Amino acid sequence: MEDAIVKLTSKEGETFDVPRKVAMMSKLVKDTFSDDDDEDDEEDETEVKEVPLPNVTAPVLKKVIEYCTHYQEEEMTPIQTPLKSGTLDELVQAWYANFVKVDRNMLFDLVAAANFMDIKPLLDLTCLAVSILIKGKSAQELRQMFNISAELSPEEQAEAQRENAAAESS
Amino acid sequence: MTDIPRTRRGKKIEAASSVTWSNLSDDDDDDNNNNNDSTLALPQLPEELFFRISSFLDVISLVDMGTTNRYYHALCQSNPAGWTNLCLHLWRTKIHVAPEARALIQENALEAYRVACADATQRSYVTKHEFCYNPDTHQGTVWSFRFKESAGADWTSVDPWYRGLPCRQMVFLESGKGMQYVNDNNNDEESPRLLDPPVPIAWRFLTRPMDLPQRPLGSYVRFTVAGRDVPTYSVRRSPNGNWGFVMESCWGLYASYPLPPRRKKILRRAGEEPTWIHADEEESTAHSSHDHWRNKRIRTIGHPHATLSHDPLQDDSQLLITNEIQWREAFLYNVGARVLPEGDQAIDDFDRAWGGV
Image (cartoon, rainbow over all chains, first blue to last red):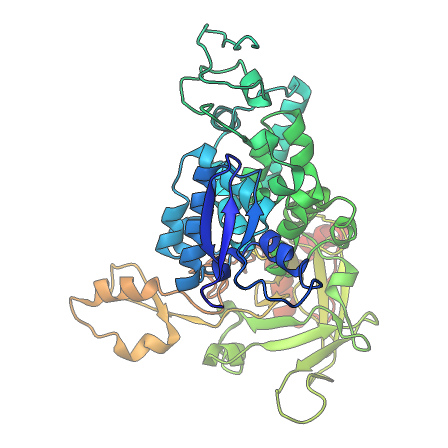
């Protein structure tokens, strides 16, 4: 039973064989199993479960599986607010800090995948990584980085500057 | 197929397979490959995910994120963006937080944050509620007290703080009475306890002591000890940034939180700057050429009770109310006056009575 395999299928239809324990980190996957519990006891241990993940592309799914696999060997340090530090290397282990050193698109895709598949530690890590991208950037830099169009009216602009000043003085 | 949008400079946005919010941006030259095969960008994340991200942001970053555009402005001002936790985490480290701010937090945490910070920076006098102590509910402030060096050895020699022990602590009841606050930590029942002080202490607020400018009620406290007025205590916010209050006269100091233990001053040889070392380090200072270096090193050791590495209240060097400032009241006390007059008229009377003092 320890060697039970789960098949995860990406958006493109590519299938990945994943040890059950690894796959169960995803609450989405876990829940599809418990849905079957009411069915007959005839063992589905030999029957391999297949879970379609239409929202997750193959490259992203590979990364997710990589995360969950490593997690079995080394549990990630839980991330709690308030953060004790501003740098990833001081908040999680080295492997995890490196794991999120990916391009921005992949990072956002990982956020979405972790959310869709309901994998809390991965969601925390990826959201934290995005927040670190945001930290310390000016509004203009943020717009450029995330491709946000600037629509703030001059009044709103001024109000925001006032907020900034108040925040800084605290 | 849809026309691929062009930036103002006419550059084609690369490989945009569909028109998304991110592609509509025509500001800034987009020569980064950000849009390559992007299935998702920040603006497309659902709100809960954005809030999850923003929950890790500090105040400045959260405000800056809100200046990017109208959508984020609204998002970043809402409670779930992180303001509730930012308030709670900050306030946990502070001694006094304005009750109006606390009341606001559920409705509008950003406003609560602002109100609390504004109050802490703008109000430098204490409210009666903050000043007093209620013995029935144990709500209120426990004040720590120590003499200043300027009070003289008669007083400092019997002041526990000067021996490295915790300060004396007092509370002030609404009735106008001062009580000793004793927290023995004995295993027996009723610690902490309130005791009558060795001599009676009465308190009241005033607004215009002789030597200091008019200020709102709660800025100045007059103590009457064993029937004699002592020089006025002037209230301000603690210089260490913890939103607590200190009140200071020419001879004494109160804080609305435990005072940091004493830092002893060691006078160096003539012609050199006095250096400060921790009281415990006294034995180890040898008179050698390495002294200067050693003292410098000891000087920067952080102290467990200090909020900053050198808490401004660990010695008298940064206190403000000197004998020179409070000279009239100090003089009157020293010549035996029982009552210290107050108000503008009192100054004229004093100057007339004491002439060229």
